[in-house]
Length: 131
Image 1 (tube, rainbow, N blue to C red):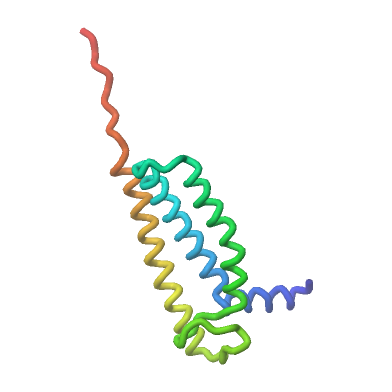
Image 2: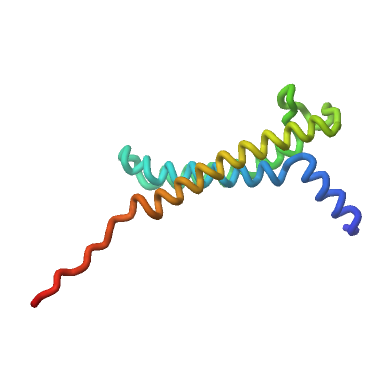
């Protein structure tokens, strides 16, 4: 691959929002795994169910990337890439929606992480001292 080909591929990946969707997918997957980690044992589900959810998320990632490449989210809905009119307004609107969705999911992920690290940890009590 030449440098020009690599640059055009990178630009096309950016234009089709593949990187943004990948980041959003990873964040949503992490949030789902955190929820499953807390909720599944409380529901009495076996341990393998969390691994099953993780496996589905792993298998879904390449499919999501394929569909992100082949289809584009437009203000009119989901369209095949070849049917999309490539103008700046459509790209900007789609990018803004994906940015907002990613920020919302990131805030949820950081909140869950903070709750897990700081709110749900048991407080360590010192050993009683003998006189």
